[in-house]
Image (tube, rainbow over all chains, first blue to last red; front, side, top):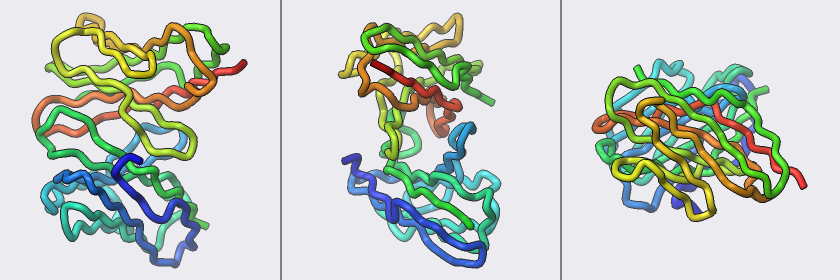
Length: 114
Length: 113
């Protein structure tokens, strides 16, 4: 149990579908992150939220839309995805952006776009 | 910009043998260094970290890593591996302050009997 929970664990969606990934943390952290993990590539940081405010968007296509209603929850809304978007999407949290400690990761959502 | 290089994409090793997973980073300033482990179908878990002080850091399950500033390396070692150590290992670097974690491409450790 890492304290960061992601749902669903697996998701198969068509290119015209709309779906959402959910992340929840009960660690009292103020910063939350979305990462994309593709085979043979480094983890790609997608979005960063700190105290519910988006602080970073690493040139992510607009078909990915994050939402952070409070410091404990983070969503990633998906629409009109492409097959190359198939990957493991990892959510993480940390106490805040300034700290030198660790990030806590969820187990990820394995997304397959067909 | 900082980057992390893990030269070995896969390291096969027999059980009870020693192992070293290599990590080099590029940064002109002081950094914090991390090793994360990812077991199959799991998220990443912190294995150990170097922030300051002693250059040798250890994890609870027998891994250790040594920060070498002159060689900009943070190699991960274990003197005797177990089957259960089979996983993917990621090296990461973070500059102090308002900076994000930058990960390497990962090294898959395969331990066989």
